[in-house]
Image (cartoon, rainbow, N blue to C red; front, side):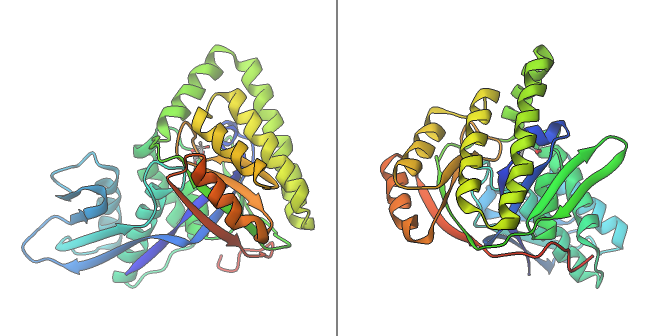
Length: 317
Ligand code: MEV
């Protein structure tokens, strides 16, 4: 069995699609798993995904992004097609937590293990990127990258070059409360809406993206120095900018306000927006109260997670 983590965008979502930097964090304790077993009754791999509501052979659903990914990997690595891949995931779908990237990464890791191969995270991220394109149109590549590296990352697209991917140093443990609106929002919808608005008014949106980029730079500095209150302010600023970009919602605004009223250092929507999750940065002693306040304000689920301090290097590449 192979696994892959969920992710949270700390700051910079949406602007990252337009070449600005963003910082993403892996969520080690919320994971997707893939298990491969032999199945000699089939000549096409079968994907069995009870949590996603289906069991299909890749020939039956050739346009499904996971079918395409499995086909690519088994062909490239000479893996027998007489297999069944069972997927399980604790990550809510369409919630901003990278469920699609985590499932795809778990599948690639399991298929590679089966064929006795190892690949660097950047190569795994590249394979998964192709299937992510099927999920949400014009992804930046940040989700598949943070999931494959399983480390806090700085991510920036560049024209005519591979994306800039750097490790992010974190000086102190960070406690977050994640609140789920319970509203499923496929990322491609807000991403597509932002694209239309940007096309209609590029000057305004480029200026908003520049403001996001400036706070992402400041957030990296706050992480490196361990200035958690400063990071909290930056998250609030990011939420305001995401509202202006047009990807927040009444529910996300209510949850972020409730978290701040309950003592969070800062809060923002995380991921594509319009639904899905928000995150609140807190001192550990306030986490339970903030989770209670989020549920009272309508969160269907809450989760407290701690991001461990991290060094600014990639150990495995
Ligand atoms: C989704 O996790 C982050 C977005 O910026 C989309 C993307 O980067 O592909 C909203």
